Image 1 (cartoon, one colour):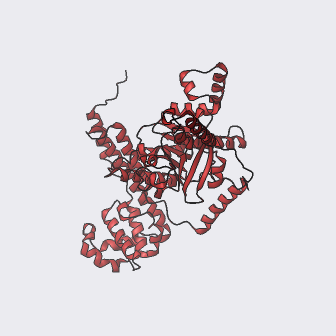
Image 2 (cartoon, one colour; image 1 turned 90 degrees about the vertical axis):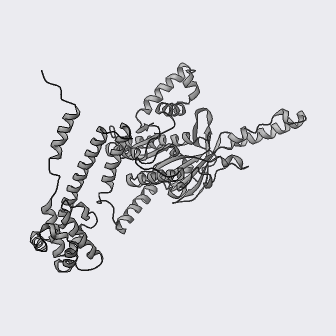
Image 3 (cartoon, one colour; image 1 turned 30 degrees about the vertical axis):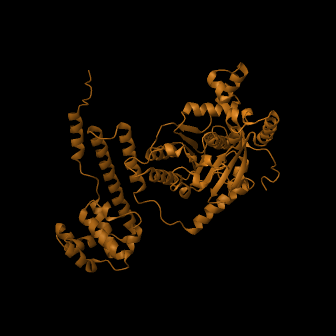
Length: 505
């Protein structure tokens, strides 16, 4: 009979003790060789300065010598054993390793500056692995000990530390040659040209919107705002569905069995994934969502409902309905999705329900929202995907005669409009006009009431099933209003078929 493994705290402590007795990863030979190369020829510093600092060295003395070299080189001064002597002697840095003769030892350790970059990467890699060990020990100690964070928050905190290590390791970034930047710009222009000048980014499924914006572009943060009942979620869902369908169709055009290039991710903080799926099914099957919930549908409608649902299962569309998700958890899940399936678009419904990164405690709500929008912009830029974040509007809209939103109406605006590449508002005049239906008791004669009712009816006909998408800010193009069709029965947005003769010119 095989004994069950001992899961007691004592056994765990024993296992951790075995880990703690190991020597942390280090490459002192590479450290000495790099320092020798730097002291021999300061130009070697250019090969490692982008990603290496003294803190990355396992040997504290070696790290201090590296920082002293870096300080002189960056100041345009010579850094060699002679010029560094006074600095190192006065600070006592070399006392631990025998004094100035250690510099002579470093000079004999080098094998040429051509290998400086490799030495630097070996040092940096050992540092990353030491950080991983520290993070792992912190996670284990937090799990064993008492802490203010529950289990899920501890996972998020661990993910945040790993994310910081991955992004702050110092190996990314730097200048991009103008020739490379021009190539990217030409590729974008060519894509728009091949699409008849309409869409260079990912399609939103809305013809006039794509014409004005060129589609949804990587690294852009788009804010979609509106008052309750305007249809923010319905419009965002329409865009997400259309983008996912475009990705699926593009894959099918390449041949059977070809998978879409990436997925569309919806973070639904307000509605459950089932509610969101029902909304999409209602729109595509043209069956009222209210009737679906009541079961008030006929056999033909149910058959259509099932057929459409089978088609929709092929869409590269994923939903995360975690309530009050933190920015760090969202970022980690997006990075994981991009690595495993690819990621083309992120939709967040809505940003006021999010929490900032674990471990951050903003002083006020405006600062908190500002941190969230900055984080969403960072996700868009890092993962090179468009991010659409829904936002609430303040109640001051209701106090105006013209209730069309403005940038100043953004709730807890802070830096929302500053961080966003585009800010757009969804507005339906029909909603407000419907509330102003004349009441017979407000008139002293039936003739006046009938005249008012007829006037109201004419106005209702003009705005019936119509919506406006007000593009108030667009960093890369014009602003203006896009007219849309809205069908309340299916909470469905579509192009308003007026005149499109000039579309595509």
